Image 1: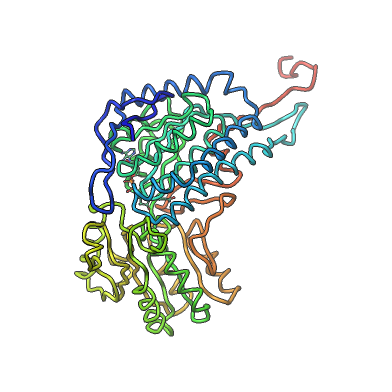
Image 2: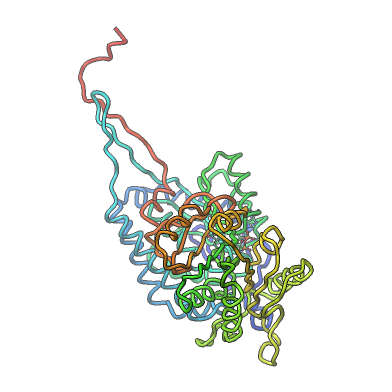
Length: 487
Ligand code: NAD
């Protein structure tokens, strides 16, 4: 891959530090890319502002902007297999997952094209002799900052609504995974989007990301990543009085009642925590099991966990692929060691798999722990790996108190056949998304976001475009009489 990034419509070498993409399979360097320095960020923002203000983009009607999004979706579809393979290479994720992520990215552009085709504005009820309305307008240049776990899907989730809203976008992908975001940028520019509307600037978060957030020409930042980073970005946004949306971390509870369908629940739990090797903000990483079935259910869960197929992402049979990097795998391993120190019982996993085929990869075994109190670090902190911690509960009040006793509030899963109970619990949970008898399912038409320290703002859904717009109310006088006050 050429050492080029997209700065204000120009593919060229970045002026910043080199970002290395390392293979999760053996740690070798897949690609070296010169990232963007603050001067590159400035160039990208200025170019974005110029093209966003140019009548050829600014004056496009929504249905005309929709055509650009549809063309981008078609281009993603045409390159789908290459994009999926590249993301598997860069992130280690299984090919089935990266194919689904590319399909999701494509669907996101199509969805927002349809929203543009069908959107409307509000004529409000007047309280005097005027017509009143509220309209939405582009912000100008939007900063988008994304993490490494699902780059193409999280990039699309920001780029599509931001362009649909009529903005220019400056995207910064994560240090570990710049390749698929750059490949997506090639696909988007090749589709005929006006030059300069999209910049993709890899680089270190504290340099490139920080320069984007602080730049006076950036009118909004949409961030997905860890809570500590989100807090730092939120602090800068507060100083700038700039809108910001934050999709942050999670420690999501999954709840098993004794009446749940056993097979369905076990499959849902395994998928919820061990797909993506647990590197998912919505991973169901704490399972609460009713005390009356606790040991039997765990036995079955452990048995099925041991049967999961571990292997390279490129093998379609693989269920649990290597983690994104050896550094991250070692971090996960250290957290499991800490759990042992806290007194955890390790029911399965708890180390790297044995065998020649696993020697060089960033593999970690699917792991289940228990016998830790809910206030232990293991039950409270996001591990972001294939590690599940189990806890028993006695009744609904005990369950809700324990499950909500977390700084996070991203997602929750409930497994029961009792629909009244499912509804009661769903309404009591501090969670932006609740899944009942399913888990980790997404639809672009349904808003997504966190409560508490899992974030602010919502992505997806029809309102997803409005999040990248400024609202303006207009009063249009309908009388010919001068105002009585002026005499
Ligand atoms: P991270 O917070 O370390 O980095 C995310 C992005 O922010 C990267 O591009 C990084 O370079 C950039 N960044 C870092 N410091 C910055 C700064 N000071 N200013 C501006 N940008 C900065 O997160 P990560 O390790 O890449 O991703 C894992 C985290 O993301 C987990 O906590 C996970 O839960 C979260 N996540 C959340 C969602 C969601 O939708 N809620 C989705 C996926 C991942």
